[in-house]
Length: 109
Image (cartoon, rainbow, N blue to C red; front, side, top):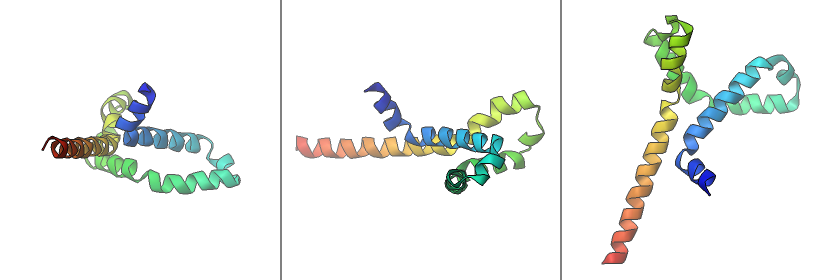
């Protein structure tokens, strides 16, 4: 039950982490993946799912983080990559809270 709660509360963040993991895995096995039909399907899906990560990475490059040393870049820039997903989770949670408050106030009248 606790795992379901984690998925429900952070579904967009988990999607972002899974997308990043798939992106890295496809980068490692890109030649073999391009040759298979399943690999082509995964690459097509990744082209859509990778957009928030790609936009945040572009923003980081505009801010000059691309020239930072590797470990520092990993510590600072990697969490920033997942900001759109965390923001989406936060907004969904706020909407759920507002909806539950409205439904509770209807029953107390």
